[in-house]
Amino acid sequence: MRDEEHGLNRIVVIGGGITGLAAAYRLTERSRSVRLPCDVLLLEAAPQLGGLISTARRDGFIVESGPDAFITTKPWALDLIGDLGLSERLIGTNPERRRTFAVRGEALHPLPEGFLLLAPTRIWPFLRSRLLSWRGKARTLLDLRLPRRRSDADESLASFVRRRFGREALARLAQPMIGGIYTADPERLSLRATFPQFLEMEARHGSVIRALRREQSAASPADQAVTGARYGLFATLDDGLQVLVDALAERLPAGAVRLSTPVAGVAREGARWAVRLRDGAVVGADGVIVTTSAFQAARLLRDLDPDIGRELEAIPYASSLTVNLAYRREEVAHPLDGFGFVVPSCEGRSIIACSFSSVKFPNRAPAGHVLLRAFAGGALQPEPLEWDDRTLLTAVHRDLEELLGIRSAPLWSHVARHPRSMPQYHVGHLRRVQALEGHLNRWPTLKLAGNAYRGIGIPDSIRSGGAAAHALLAELDRSPNHSCAGCESLI
Image 1: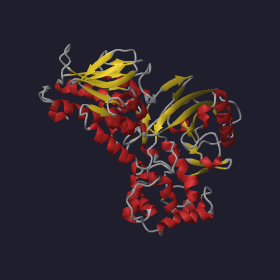
Image 2: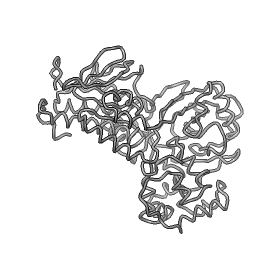
Image 3: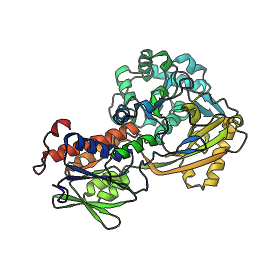
Image 4: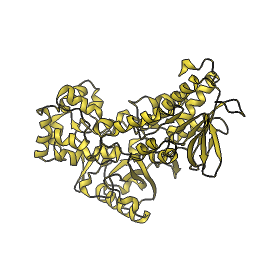
């Protein structure tokens, strides 16, 4: 299984987002470190690398069109950044503003101190909050008395929250908090595939609140005051996440990347793979890693293996969009004393969340200015994706005007649309992934990677790409036609 022209094993990586870049980088590093006979070729349909990650500078602002940070409790992004020599460029969130608001009516109310995603860890701040009625608060605290569920069957997030905390907590707290992460319908979102720790808390402690309180008691005083997501655990790079994309691209060999090169399909021809390009050309390969979205991977692989195609096509997606808006600070009445706010879908607004980017991270806006990032779309509110930019911007600005007391039009705005960008981990998702992995066993030198399978965040995507690279190299090393002295110990 050798490339006849170069005497190398050719590995084709399809997709140049963060997953594909991580896979190509790991393949290249292994080749360099132990002289693996690998020729890596990354094929990307778009004219640029990075997928959803895209950073730009405008009038002194740092503008992220896609994700703007990653969580540090999962080590894979930090490890990669360290390997690339970028650790000194890491920055954390503003330690003085680590709280989140939620909308109720025309006002922003802070999430109570110690509230973590689904439940409170501190009772008195929760009781003083205006986000729930007294009846809703009482029902939430009933979690302390309810028996644990005995079944281990998969359950939707909505079912779990209603069962433990009640309907009002679901509508006012859990739905917007989780919606801001997964842009998902909580009635269909698999708790086991997204937040299995809550199932484990219930199983071990009976009460989620009790488990969270015990966990929080061991945290530092600063972390105990955090509300919403644990913002102290988020980080980014000083000039935006594009720094990571560019650093990975620079580490790949010359000629290893082909942009504007869409792939039409993947087939098996004899002992090798044939990667068919849309322009009619065919690239031979000894191994293939597909890092595109699941529905794109289904199109590439359905002729090769209909079972794989069906499982991939069954993974649903939601669309989203990000609107960056720049304002003069004096035109925004709200003190912006937090990182942003979430909007329950029951409020009927156009946006689902807003991040105060210039508060959350330093140097995102010039002095005397504010950069806001509004989010719309998702599984529950797909309509904004169909609006033209003028209609969209009018609706977004109207929401921000009412909620933040903005007194003027933005200095400028930028709309980034992300159609079918967020995989939806519906109930039963992990069973589907297991079935898919079983079908893939028929094709040992074909690997799938990306955020559609076992984690949607940047660290998960990096882990997925690296794991696919290592698994493929191990498989090639086992091949009788492959000779690679010294590489086995590194895989």
